[in-house]
Image (cartoon, rainbow, N blue to C red; front, side, top):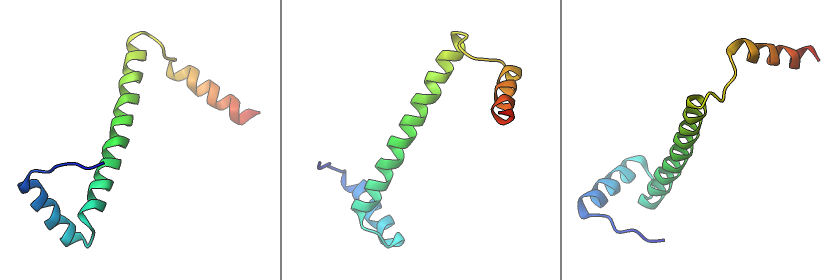
Length: 73
């Protein structure tokens, strides 16, 4: 995949890469990996909030009891 960067962004990226001792392509790869990880996290949080809004959760006391039973076995 190839992407086009505007000259200002490309210059900033090149400067950052130079200061970090990395190739610009490596910085882009790392940034995109972080973005994807963050997007997956945000999706999981959004799903959790939707489940809570629908009442699909258990109370803390019930969760504590479940965890305690795991360790009692």
